[in-house]
Amino acid sequence: MPFTSESARRRSRVPGIGVLSALGAQHRVRIAQALTLMLVTSLLVVPLPDAAVAPASADASLEDLRERAEESADALEEATDEYVARQDALEEAQEELIATLHELQQIEGDLSDMREPLAQLASTMYQQPDAGVLGILAAGDLDEDLQTQAYAAKLSEDNQALIQDATDLRQEQVGLAGEAQELQTFTQLEQAELAAEVTSLREQSESSMNELTDELESRGLDPEAYMAAADCDPSAASNANGYPNGLLPQEALCSLYDDKMLRADAAVDFLQLNVEYVEKFGENICITSAYRDLPNQHRVYAEQPPGFAAVPGTSNHGLGQAIDLGCGIQNFRSERWNWMETNGAKYNWIHPAWAKSSPFEPWHWEYEG
Image (cartoon, rainbow, N blue to C red; front, side, top):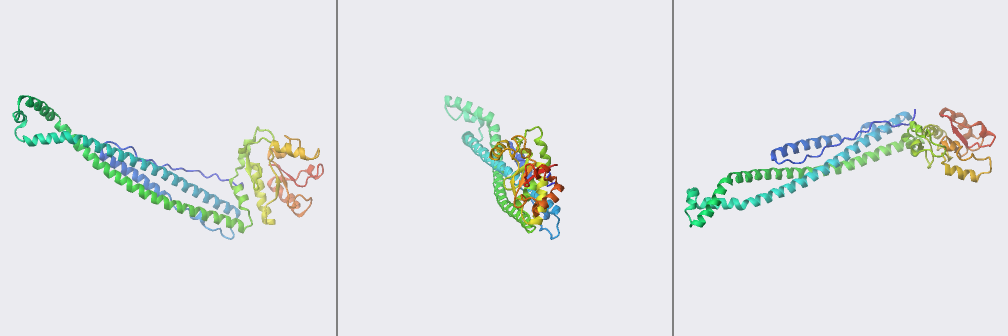
């Protein structure tokens, strides 16, 4: 079964708190809704599933081990996505807090502008509380009476609207002040929660990775090779279609280990073969050469006597379907060469007939998948 990881990626985005409206009551409703969404999001970030961190049993199969690793990686990625979403929401809440405080300052200014005419109105009414406009007109000379009449008439016309505006602004001021306090408290709590979750996620990630690494090493498997297998999708080999020898796109290749690469399907089968090899010999298959791009084909051709290297642009190495091996496999009919000859074909890796004679290359193996 290929080493693949096809689990669905989920990214939940938490809506930010909406722009505050002019009315304090509507603000409080919207703030309550936003807080509810944020708190629901916080509940979504839960500890990794038991399967992600539970130690492998002694008789767990390699298939179980791969599944456990994939579940651990998916759970950690989902938790990380949740954390990023909550960070975004926190930033929006902080921006909303700043906007609220700015609006509160603006209302303070508007109230200050109203204090003078309100004070004048109060003073006038205090001086003539019962006489009304006519009484006010009789309090001075003619010029003063005319000025006072105009002023009193204007105040009489506007005083109700002015007082109502001041009352509304004061109510809005009280509402915004309450919302600002709620937002301030909420952002402080949210920052504390995020700090705790960062620590928890880091510990869980380290624990799950150590669990996997320890289990792999206890089985004699190389974690680098195992991770390479888990990350490689064999269907990516189709991305090589139409590309010339030695010019395959990166999307068609997968890493092995020791900085070597092959076409994706060839890489997956080779890494599965390597698992059996490690179980037998306790170490990875030694790779001396794998995929060769066109410049490297020219280099190898120039370094070899004529007939000992394929003409650049014609080598199976340039298709990502050939590999040269060492650590004893390069010795014809050695124990490790014989093992490769017996087991390689199960994973579509064979030693071609021509490499047994002309030219003689016991280290050279090709993929027939």
